[in-house]
Length: 175
Image 1: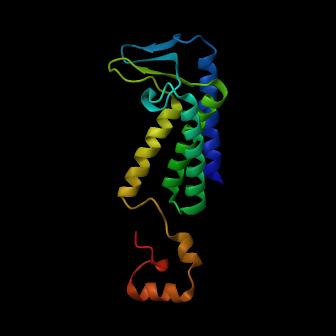
Image 2: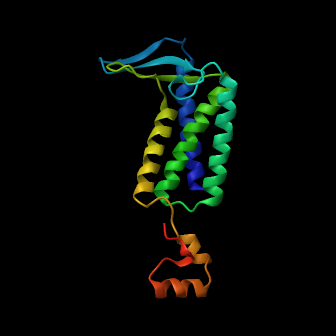
């Protein structure tokens, strides 16, 4: 429940920032931080790095399907550690923030432009998506993505006794 609350809070923050950005015309520069970055109103009809820009309906449909599949799979099937649940909450919030833009505005509102390098303009939701994927990959390689806590509670005494005798985790999950 806390992870859903985190996802909702982050989605609301993303949408609040974008509402302020959308209050100005596309191209308007709100703030410039020297020669490092600027906050400017930009839009994008495609996916990451403007992929499939000419097919916004396809991007919206695929985004919705991926969000639903991720939510079902992660919250319905996997036993994630707390850091992994937080990362998934951020991933879902970022995906939801951009999906809301696509569904209600036909495009994603972007606003962070890095000036010293040629890089696509991005937004808070993109940061959430990128950082959460990086964290999930790190957790996966560290073996800290899933927990066996629920499995150990569910297993019967025979499996728990056998696991203890063999020096393995109960339930046979050796990941």
